[in-house]
Image 1 (tube, each protein chain N blue to C red):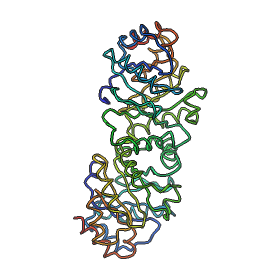
Image 2 (spheres, rainbow over the protein chains, first blue to last red):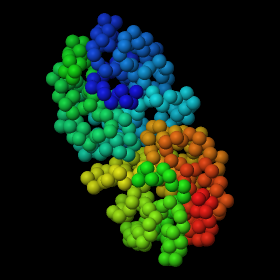
Image 3 (cartoon, rainbow over the protein chains, first blue to last red):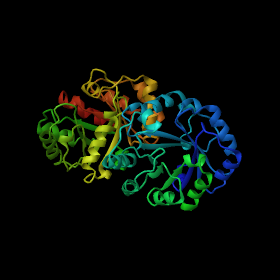
Length: 227
Length: 227
């Protein structure tokens, strides 16, 4: 899965806590996007995850669970993305909850399906930022987190997450210049063809989420922008 | 250097804060050990590091600096080992001081010479344990740290460090059973041929330190035990 993921250019992120109609879901899954990531910050329940899994599974698109809650993990996904929040102030969000999970579940874990994402959360107002008690990094901090993701921890993904807000393309560019092995994901605030195109210039893969629930046509345009 | 390090079976660790005579140093360097690691916890100064570097460099044995203080780093070593302390309670010792170092020095860093060590410090009485504010892990904790070192962070080395005390060979065995890619270093309390032999059964590489300063003959015997 890590090998395939390296070729992704566009993914949609579906939030198990939000409602999406069958028609919209079909258009998302059949859009030509490279994968569907199921993930959210709040109110992620096993029921919500299973509902999306069963509905996305009707289509051929790869389906990934981004794990945010131990209680909402289920078999059946093509891969499991595990965030480690590099700019959290707490070791808990870098590795301690993951260590606890490995203690409990290591006999059942298939590491070929598991992809570690080095997150850098850039939006102070976002739930993810507050929940993980993150600090707001400056440009040099971010670039150095990217170097660490690739060289120190050898993570397959560095995920620059603006979480609802549209980020700084110049910073995305600077980050990309540091990375050779690690794949750069950009997420946050992409709501149009133009924004998708702009961020895709630098990021290996863009993640489009919220706009799915607000303007499905605009969401589908972001696929066209990168293909 | 990572490729060569995978074949190491024995290394001596020299403390820049301790005195070693030329004759003893020659015997250590010419012993057949795979490498000399220069590293310590307290009173590591640039003068101490440079003194050992220049004296060890007279011999062919590879010479590595294990970085514990930013002020005592110097060019000239074959490799730089950087500890990340997985069982510290503080993110500082896992990645924050490293992040600061990358911010300051990333333009000068040659990552081909840098090897990250995932440390698990097992001796509550040791200076390293106290300095890094570590927690004492049980066997399951340790095994899970080893899994994390290999699968989550893809570290080249997992270093089980009993720091002066002789460890539990059964635990070293259990840890080794988890590792396929990551090299297992064992350090702590090896003072005899028999202890070296026992720990080498399970560890890929044993680290011999304190006994160098107490009984040079016994130190040299540890090389014979693994060769």
